[in-house]
Length: 174
Image 1 (cartoon, rainbow, N blue to C red):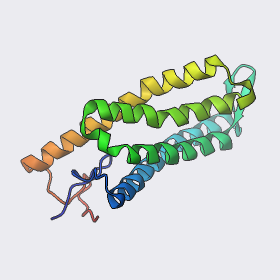
Image 2 (cartoon, helix red, strand yellow):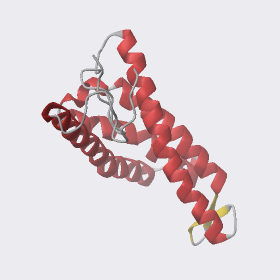
Image 3 (cartoon, one colour):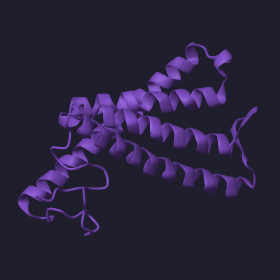
Image 4 (cartoon, helix red, strand yellow):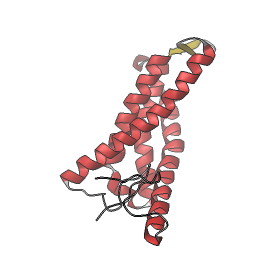
């Protein structure tokens, strides 16, 4: 039986805790994380062109290298994606999906804080910014992905979207 895939969600019922399911979930999460990273990297590319420089202004007295930001996005996408894949079984509920989003966002926001301030300059402000950023964006992304998964499942069950095809109409293979 073919299963349904969307841009944001793996097939329903593929939230297995078994080792094979875990590997598939992590692979799915890392792929998702890298896709998100590529979107953010495209934004950095636009900023580089607009600034005519690989050094991007962050604050009036602080600049950051665009390649370091790209590395943060790619590394953060891999790490956050792996976390999402590992915690995938929690996404069965909205609260679990939001918690997953928060935990996955923590390393990305921590990396951003480290990019702006070295570890030797880390203080309570960096901790607050990391927690606040992850606490605001992470649960929203988790809820969005969960809602999208629910909507895709409803479409599949009502026959509005053929089983075994993605949104683009291409056959999906597991």
